[in-house]
Length: 219
Image (cartoon, rainbow, N blue to C red; front, side):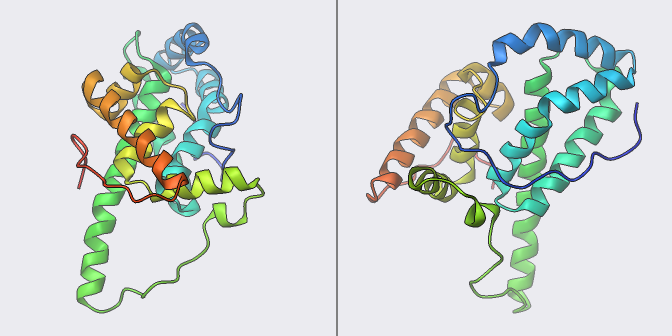
């Protein structure tokens, strides 16, 4: 397997719901099986092919979850390092896309947990800055007004709802696939996705929105 870390990618995310933002997942399954077999054999070419196929999608997913280009890049690189370390132990029936998005999502959850701990420590020491912050990539993205409003509304959703909605809209996973990535039952995932859609519609309409507790949401 290759030993180098993937290089830094661009930070501008594609429009969330634009047509063709991600290829259909069903059409990728057959090709992914060949990639998985190559990864299981330790073929460097299979790793490069997987990286070329999924890097942009995983990066965009992490960028929208983290809302921070540096964090997204670090988590992206760690996702590919996890694949490099685990490639030869993959099951032959592994859904490669779901595997990568599961790892990326779990890394983000872990990052959130540690960041919350760090913020609380810094606040206790009165070292946490008040307000402000560096602009996100979305502040500089050239998009039309609808896309800007959509990205802003998406960014205001709680992470548990944001990640669920991204998986079925931007990444076009089926609800049962998103459920597996999120560690939920299919019914629970469908409920979360439905709530996320409703919350997003209210946010876009600038209506007040009550946020219910998400099933299995990490704290």
